[in-house]
Length: 419
Ligand SMILES: *[C@@H]1O[C@H](CO)[C@@H](O)[C@H](O)[C@H]1NC(C)=O
Image (tube, rainbow, N blue to C red; front, side, top):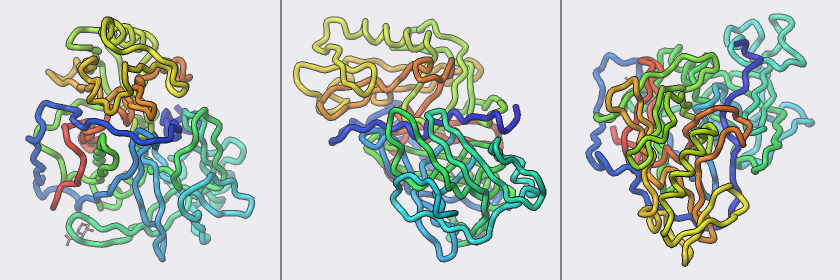
């Protein structure tokens, strides 16, 4: 598929606005808990890793982000962590007429550092249809559209990005990223309060591919989002826990982290939804299932609730919510009424991605609980199946683009491993 036909499936900007406190029980995956040892890999690797602190949560924020310094002198930016798109961009004061969204920091200022059209990297970004590259010395424009009606238009620039590596070294590789001077957002939710997007899909324009090409880190990404909020992110292959479950990535023209086929199980029993392919996308707040799989899940959930002191309630933000006799104070209060959803990977022996109730339920401020699995057809995502942040909580998720494998291991995600 041509680059300019591409629409990332990322749901970067899907944020719910609820205002209040959110408390979540944090025992997502019971099996193997506490048995994770971080092992250091053999010294054959390229370079060492980068570890980033992560902030954010499912509720009330609806997204996870990390802080990155860019430029000289370095300035801080908050970037939404998105494994569903390639390009990293920051809001940019390229012209007085720039259309910027409300953001935590002042926009990046370009300094005649545009990437040219003749640069090979320019071929790997999506060109705006209105003004594609005409001559080799034109600046390289990009446009990225997200599935949740957010978009960024701008110019590719290069600048220093200072990093401290896990081996203790500090260096400032020069990386290309988007200087976004025209951001729009028309979705039903508010855009996340960040300065841009950290694109971690496996296309050539991603900063992880660039770091790999510079021989600095391996093209391996890991994120760990805690059910209590926060977590960590890493780039490189220093930190792969023993006991990680692995499945192969499926090639696809969109550079998505696609896997499958999977059969869905609820409470250990088949849902009749088989052979699904599924995208791992940290840019999405929620998990999405195709209509048939969604209906099957919902009807099994509902039949499990018959006779329980819990009833349906309209919440106004998410389509399916329940209330109890008293407001729920934690997802732990009600996990006993719900069962685990499992993705059974039929091309990998005995590999299951287990989603506990904490991985698909959201406790909202009035003390109701809502389903964090949505019907992709109702979200204009067609037949897509996608695992989003809600189901990544309390798991370390690893995207190994070197071996073309996706892995996961239970973790409380509270602290990055020590070196
Ligand atoms: C640490 O890792 C970085 C990134 O791979 C590399 O450039 C640097 O030379 C390494 N430093 C040492 C002391 O090995």
